[in-house]
Image 1 (cartoon, rainbow, N blue to C red):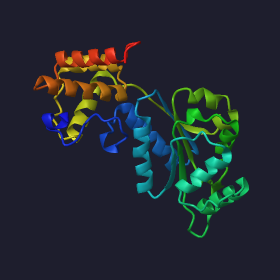
Image 2 (image 1 turned 90 degrees about the horizontal axis):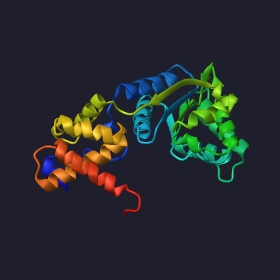
Image 3 (image 1 turned 60 degrees about the vertical axis):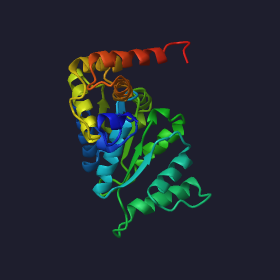
Image 4 (image 1 turned 180 degrees about the vertical axis):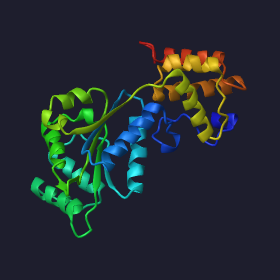
Length: 274
């Protein structure tokens, strides 16, 4: 593999949600601060949106670790398009709480309340994170999410909720006033700027054990233009550029190497081509 050619310990541009590789752009850092604020200050419902590939899931992984380090129970669901009963059951499973087989919705609610609401010190504040929330198709499930916010003790939400999704999540919430009125914090991820793309590359290269300035400025210009600053696309094109550079015996990723990588990506994505 080309990582050995470039002297990496591992591949720097894998499109997997590894928290070590999260680059804190101003938008990502602000989003994480806002999400943590929503929990610590008891805001109840927070919403994080961003286009495909902007790093929502990776940010959620970091957010979840921050929460668990602070002692919260976390139910993190990546496919929340479930019936109300299945949503409650999945939350209980994620919280390592008892979810009786064949239980009614009422039984599931009691089990959740018992898990988070005990006054004898056994209760544990939990956070529910629903990724890809724009995919929730059943209005009853949105209502169930609203009802989670009714679990309150001493003016604290026992089960605060974070909805994460693509931009179409926002109008969906807007069409559901009972949920919209509960939103305490909202934040949005945006694509990287040209300068942020340089820092993003340097961060991932260093985490992987390589040189932070492996990409020439001209190569970064081409990469940013081709990817439109979307981190997932940056990863895909940058990884291909490393492969092209390795094949050509290059010492750095120059504009010429990047141009060939961008050309290959354009060819691969052209209509009618395999």
